[in-house]
Amino acid sequence: MSLLRSVRFRLRKDPEYRFQAHAHSPYPVEDTEVSGYAPGHGGIRVRSGWTRGNRFRRYAENIGSRSAREPDAWKDFRAPPWARHLDGPRAVIDTLTGAFRPFTPVLLIDGRPAATGFGEGTVTVPAGRRLVQLQSGASGPYRVVDVPEGGTVDLDAITTRRRNLRCMEGSPADSYADMALGPRGRVRIEDGLPHRSFFTGCAAGAALLILMLVFGGIGPMPDFDTRSAATLVPLAITVFTAMALRAIVESSRRSPPGEALGPEHTAGIGHRVLDPADTSAPEAAPGEAVLRVHAVYRQERHGKNAGPGKPTGTGLKALATDKRALERRDNWRATGEPAPPKVRPWAAPPIIRIDGRELPAVWGLNEYRLSPGDHTVEVAVPPPPEELVAEGAAIKLGERATMRTKLPVRADRPATVGAYARIRMTPARNGTTVKEYRGTIRPA
Image (cartoon, rainbow, N blue to C red; front, top):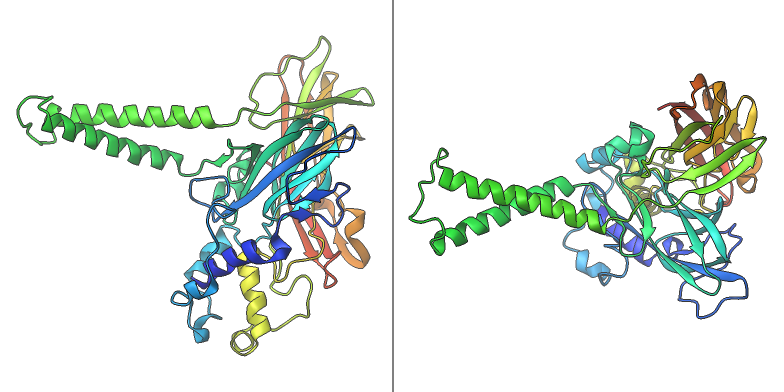
């Protein structure tokens, strides 16, 4: 339980994890609602929350919805001092589910880091169409919003500490299952929906059957034999009816696919950013073909001594005797960071080339309109943003950081390319740059 305590108190109480402007944000961020904007500007108000994962959650179970408990309230649940340094089954599970990744979110607007952390705040931006992206130890969902002059767009963002296993090595479309970004009040993570629907249906069926028995709706007391239709039919009907109603209700609450961004033309090739949930068939113009490139990444976990602060021992003896080593280890377990960096790293857009020409791209679903025929597509891990590079940083992007494929692109149906990257961004001791950056990419 000490792990749960450290997660809750760090993300609620530690100012380093509060929703705030990113160190390299070109936009001002206020933690209160903005009453007025400068001419030509509007706001994007974001509520950023988190959940442990593997469970159905709506927005922000841990942000503002419950009062923070005092530390003394957890004294009966803490591991004894002599055992806090020991690894247990929870550590093994967290390793398998990516819980040790640095999952504190970074919110990007038009490709630039704008805010980071958990809580609520307003980002002031120029009015117009903006692309809002969520990165949380992986490329996450994104949303195209139209910011009105003098008005505000409200968004909810939620991420998980433990990733769904299919998000870690599945198809690119699976990588959004445990993170969400969308209109306020309509954001949810859908893991566990079938189970909740099933149990809800069973409870409703049992309740209806009892009412029918009590009020004589099915005549005399039925025989509760497994072969009795009087027992099975009402129960089966109510179970499936409740499951269907549950699915309909959740579907009605789910936010619809976002709008596309673009097109933007480069060297005669049009580019649009599509919502991954948009399954509509593209309508290509005469003499035009459609190529879709879906690129995602996940971030490798930090080492136990990465980031700012003086390194400490990580063995059992150091953890048992050095309070600071134990604190860094606990913070690493809770947040994926031994210590919060002053500048939280983010990933630049992927590099996508078609026939040798570099084109606009984002982490997500890119659509390109080009001439039919055979085309060579390259998708590469980008170098780190210039602001994060310091002298002496180890940047390793070898042959495995680029994938190439040649495929025919026909006018009658879209061609698709999937790419899955793994990136390691290790913060330096100064907390403002990275000391190591490396990546690989594979077809997905």
